[in-house]
Image 1 (cartoon, protein in one colour):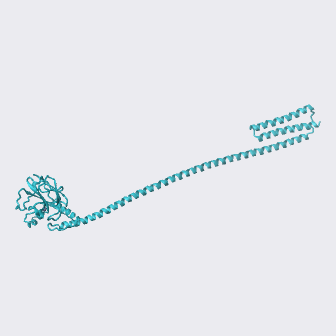
Image 2 (cartoon, rainbow, N blue to C red):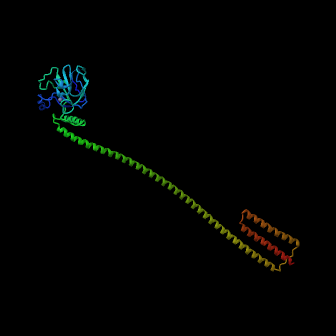
Image 3 (cartoon, rainbow, N blue to C red):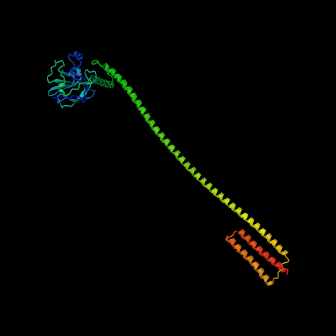
Length: 369
Ligand SMILES: [Zn+2]
């Protein structure tokens, strides 16, 4: 047969045969079972198929006694198993149970230093004088026996004591040397407090750091937006200045062109004025010459040709016609723009003047006859 441990999770805090000196006062050679770490209320399972030989307070069964507290004995095919210091049971005497079936919950009843499950094995016919009150080492009945290291045992006691402390304080510990456990507990409590304070500080620091990062990101975004606005404003200003410069350039070009046109017009006007002045001077000079010549003719009495009336009429007419034709021709030339008006006037005046002078001369010479 092979037994299973009565708990889901196994931590052996006191092995079979341990603490010889302590158990001597009970007339035994050492611990007579396995103490397994278990908080009050931990489920306890049947180690094998069997029937419930006993359940209840140990003082009511000769094998168990007051020390066992509330306990259970199961009779299997090849041995008995005992479960002590229970909080409560969930089976009845005589009931059949299957391996692994829940029989009760671990507790701290009877004589205990702290909550745990005392689990023990007895043969079908126990020898109560074997030095272990009829109990036997469970190891041969179990395929694997886990033996705790000293550190694991210490830790197990620490865990138990912590739970006890949490549940209302450690009461009586007269059986096991647990001072070191208490000291470790106190130290570990200090360490836990310190760790908790550190963790809280770290948590607050992390929140602060996160907030700082978020704030920085927000500020960076704001700065970027402001820079963008500045860039855009500068771009707009540059465009405005460029447009202004272009307008100024166009205005300057226009002004220059206007000034050049004015200068050209002024020069042209000056040339024309000079030409007019010259023409007037020429006309005046010509008129003077004609007057002079006329006077000369008037003074020349020695020339007195004889001309008939018919010839005179033809001569007058011819002179007048030539004057008219000259006037018409030069007027047309001036109007058509083929000749400068001033020059045309000048030439026409000269011709007409000459003709008038000739006619006058002819008339005077004719009169003298
Ligand atoms: Zn025990």
